[in-house]
Amino acid sequence: MRRDHWQQQIARLDPETDFEQIARIVGLYEFPWDSQQALSFALFRTYAVPSIGRLLYDTGEFTGAVQKRHDDTAILLEVIAEQGMESPDGRAGVRRMNQMHGSYDISHADMLYVLSTFVVTPVRWIERYGWRRGTDAERLAAVRYYQRLGRLMGIKDVPDDFEGFAALMDAYERDTYLFDAKARAVADSTLDLFVTFYPRPLRPIMRQFSIALLDDHLRAAFDYPRPPALLVRLAHASLVARGRIVRFLPPRRRPKLLRDTHRIRSYPGGFMIDRLGTFPTSMPADGEVSRTG
Image (cartoon, rainbow, N blue to C red; front, top):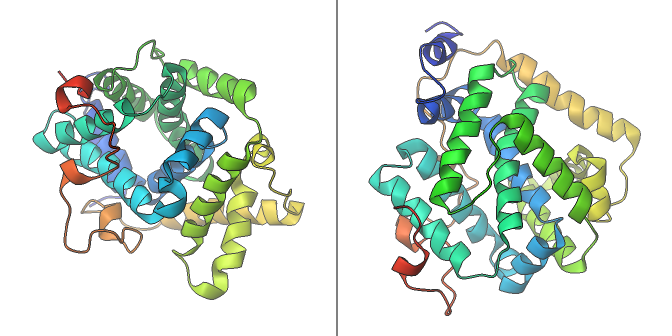
């Protein structure tokens, strides 16, 4: 296989109609590690919105069961991407997300903002650290993918293009980011989990490394100390260097799934999609929250 094998495959597809296939190639073959990291950072930045951070703290799930919540979120998003939104597993995954979201008091604005982070953060990550630049077709496919997912989740007023998603995300962060002690606790718990993915001697370094990668306004919202300028430069430079090394690797022949890595620890014997996530006692019946019609 040539190094540009998957790029050639994407060039034969139409992002207006083949957006799921393009998104699958980008996320599981061309940029699997980058996509996984970017989505993790996308979720992390949502904690800085006080209404989101407080809700996650009050559930107790993101401080008392953070590994499982990480695993459930990663698996649900990955299954939907791998199998397709219209597949039985994909629809089960969307339904499970709708059941969870429908059982909490989440504003439409917050839901729309979270959706925008899933579009914008991976595109910006790949532009900055990827082994090659993303293409216009890949960007459009990401937009169409999350527009469709947003509709299945009952989210309205979804932007028409990437620029609209980016403007929405940036404006929402300017307007809402504010320090909140509960949100900081959720961020701390998530960072504590993240560093466990690395050997023990590296964990203090990886925590500082992660904070060094945060946008200034995101770091300030959590009241994390500003890292030394040298550490910030080294953190970003190391990811750029990684991308340049990956450029010389052969194309991936099989999809790289996060659930096959050591980072997913909650289900050594396998999982059932309809049992993932939270089940609050006040959760409505399936028919009341399923919006995947």
